[in-house]
Image (cartoon, rainbow, N blue to C red):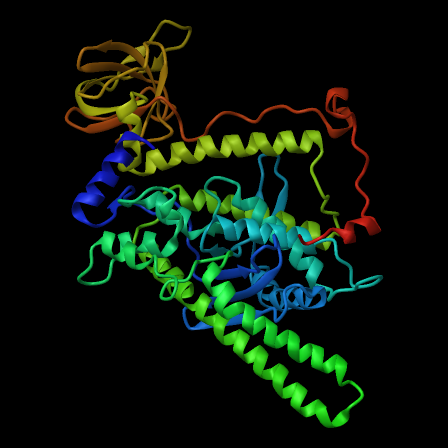
Length: 507
């Protein structure tokens, strides 16, 4: 936890309300996100119990598994979930735009992409496990499933993989989103409770954040946001409801030869399923309302300038994956050594770029770096906008500016810094005196010997420079998969789907 975040938490305790950590929304929020609230059976790693899914507060679909330990019912649930998620995903595979790369090659990219919102990181992990447990199933052979089930698994795996990318917006956990934008007066662990977190951010009239968070500890009014359920609910309500369904199923088997008992058995089964739907809906609906209230709060923040750029990257990935599905490209069970290294490198670069972009977009985020000396802000007190550097064969425009600052400056002379208001403008530190920094501007002024209007900060203008840019470092070079070193297992064999893939267990 940074110093400023700790200070914001203290202020939240003092004021009784969460304090802002951002002035803009550092994520893209689509016009039609799909909210997914999931529950799983206690003691089972990936046995789904229920889900509430929809694209609007009044547009929810409730799906349940009457007996999560029944393999056939679990896959029937997966097929029902696919019937909701797959049409939603396909609805974004209509309009395209033509993109031209630096080599002059053209390709098509979807204009929009799907976006899934879940309550917490546990739900992200649960979706990953559902994807892993379904993507290799087959519609034929032993234990066949609906053809939509393996397709759902592949898409869930893609969503879960994209969720690992910093700044990605295709699958987001609401507790993480809110935590980026507000600081509460409770611990980060307690912020994992969506009801308590939202209680600090948006307490009901007449209540403080502490009081609203304390109310959220009542599992009756505020059930856990999933995927785990409350032990009291499991023992006192869910277990009897599941037992009633099991009894109806057992009666079906015992009285299969008695036609007169068929109607009574069907009625008992219907009653048991209806009861299960009622009790599971009671656990999902409070979280459903909290999710859409969170969406409203996030929409009130203006979108950060760099968020659309990151959303373009999400659309690129969506377009590429959709094309790979059409071409039948196999989705391997695990990455090879080179693919894993490339993936890790991309995630590290994405983290660096995301942190820098947030800082350039948001003065509250940049304040963290100013406090540590990685950035400094101040006022221009001297400026020579037309200065030329004539030391080389050709004179180059190199304006000088002096910044008066009260921030600690830990950037050494000769190092490059970047203008937060003009992220493409690089400057070199020439002198660091007590209370001022002399900078030589190196880019972002046009190609001539006269700077473009407004490209050079003027005397009296407030500026902020950082020791990092918004682009991060360049791409790293990796060997081809055929050249995988022997220390990493040598060249991997080409992945070919087998019957063993379909035997992957749920637990």
